[in-house]
Length: 450
Image 1 (tube, rainbow, N blue to C red):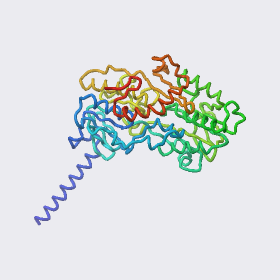
Image 2: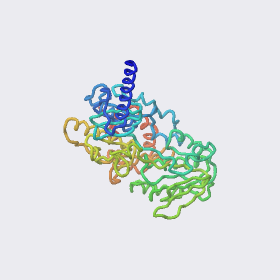
Image 3: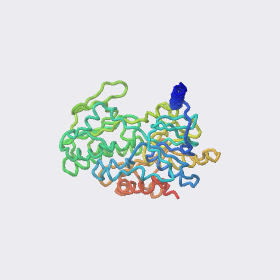
Image 4: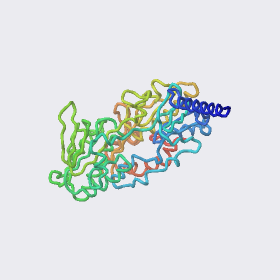
């Protein structure tokens, strides 16, 4: 009898413990059970922004082992600006990736996991595995999501080895692009750009200009007699212009006309079926269909769901930060930069070279009880490949105002494509990215950081 009561009591106690653990796991204000998960700064994302910011913070000398934690589920880190070069046959995708763990300083605590949710009122981040991580300061920089399903039929077309449908916007698809360019001999080639926010808004036409030049060099396309060429080239963009900055748009529009590219403006690709592409038109106009023989697609992009559905997001789903200080507009110990942020500038790696130092400077001041003082002016850049061997180097800030590095120091008009800029894009930028930027020692036009 006594033994039976003991067993019953033990079972009851065990059930109580299990029930308590479940309630704790699913409570709206989770607690941190391990001191090892308490950090001064947590950085969500180990892309360009996350690596640059976390290493710049570490290099300040104000943090000890594991004071800074970084969170990312990826095994590999990719130099995504180089995927245009892969699409043009200038590099391999394998040489542009590194094991993520190898890029993270051992003094940083690395959580190789996804983020489940944020609890900004409690200074907690819930990881995908259920663990909770606490912070004093939080940096949210996970980039954006590429939505291949935004175009009906696109995933199937990309996966088909026989189709001439490709995209430079993914590791698994960027090397298919050059194979389609090489294989294409005759017909209609369409290059698309969606309406809305995307990574590097110049990339959709960069690959078009490289393809045009490839076909020109192969004797398949004559820009001076494009109507008599066997290849017809269309640029179908959801935007009303070639480029969002007036100075560079004027040059690229001139180039489009000179080279015989048909501009299908405000044409937003929504579906692919066989060799038919369907485009949405603005203001509720009827959809338009176009036949193609080669199609390069840029899918729509947007914030990750764990950002969009969180208290950190603005109405568009991006981390809601002040456009000057990069500090969150509601939570003073939360910051964001890079593609996931609401900063109203073009989403490029070049932008991060200016965003990261501002964020780091202001975050460190706030940790010392001071107010932010550094201001980000919206600087970003887009080296537009206009052919093999030449690049138009667009640099600008908020308001679409040019902010040209070489124009400032050497009086050079950067709207004129140049070979020197091509070598920056092809050779220098990939080198300085891997050697310095991800280590927190490169600030773009401002040079190296000590």
